[in-house]
Length: 242
Image (cartoon, rainbow, N blue to C red; front, side):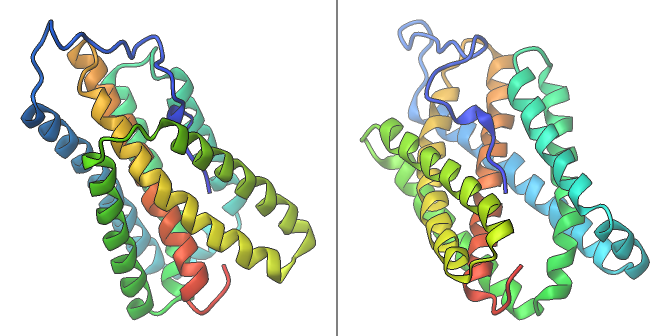
């Protein structure tokens, strides 16, 4: 479980928003930009799903992957961290390649879920996740209220989840497991709205290259929100512990 470091409230040095008086950006332009972001996000989800199905269909390969689960997890963290820290130094093409590489790598680990849970369960949880994601996206897009403070609270909640999850790896507490799962759902539901509103601001960045980078980082943020919400819902309603 991870969340990109791009979710801070301040702009990085490549993120200087242009003055709306200089370039007229209407709601149609922002909507088109958001559509591009969601296009990248769904491409990432599709890539994860395809890789997961391919790996799950090859038992020998899947067994080999299970032996290196920790290395895969570390690799995923490094890719997300590198993208977040070095985004201002790399081209949009490189950022896109890293995002898609991360999505493909995530598919390797997700292949296990296809064997742990029946397809009907996975489809049902995916439907619930997609519906919740759609609702909270609409909230983040249309609300006039600034969600920056709300987002910071959600990020603090995320840090708490990570710490509690690490602690529970050693404690093995059933009660803490369920508490983490419920809090995790609440946190990522909130982050969907927050990240959606934040992405709208990326349409006002001062160059086309910066806006392309913003689209990739926004897609990564929403991708992680969707994936983590799916995992926590699966823990709650999938009928089996991960």
